[in-house]
Image 1 (cartoon, rainbow, N blue to C red):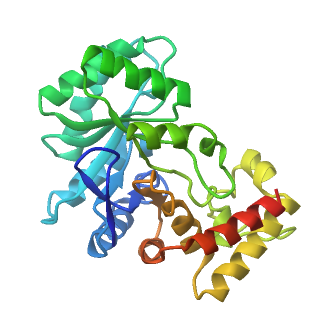
Image 2 (cartoon, rainbow, N blue to C red; image 1 turned 90 degrees about the vertical axis):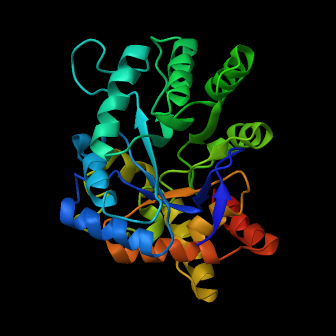
Length: 314
């Protein structure tokens, strides 16, 4: 496993991280424990979760597993999405952040959170209030670093410059959806993050599972897969064009003795702005497959070939 600094921070994260949105939902505690322990065994030191994953069980399961683990593991979690229907149970107000960080710390069984991320922007709270609350948590030792997720480029820019203007701790990372089939972030967000030192943490690096090779054109969708009950993304992803791309990418990966999963992750890691690729897993063997991507350093020639496949079929 290889490691990179998280943006311009000094904290080093494994280039393949473990996404925990299946914990407490598709996976029970025993299954979750197997996946986490396998990840740690192969050198993954970065687990990304959120206070809403598994209706809160994801954080609880992670805390339960890690309390008996001797290896240092970095935990990232998020705040900002709804935790109830009452006032102050959603958003990024100081009130909601302070309430939720205590709940997350308790569930994770930790004294501090390594990376605390705003899960989505809040149109009803000024970013200054959010940033001051996060800065206070850092000064209190409850949070080491802060980041964001699902922000647009202008929102990240606003937060960065607000932090600089007010001399507050700044976001060190952002989490966007980013894959071979979802490349909008390359237009503005990636260049901005590269310029200002924010680490990019792509989620859905396998295009919600489409880039695993599990699906075939005009064939039944395998039961239990992420897209099996996702009609909206089936419609978006299951096009003749995308299946042509998939076929070409699978051929290229096979020619090089690799899988398309490894190609998809290695392609993202070619970008130096990417600190860690957040890849979920429901089985221990998937963790091993994901981690092998870190050993494949694509050459400029190979990236050019892959990009040509994507461009020709776009």
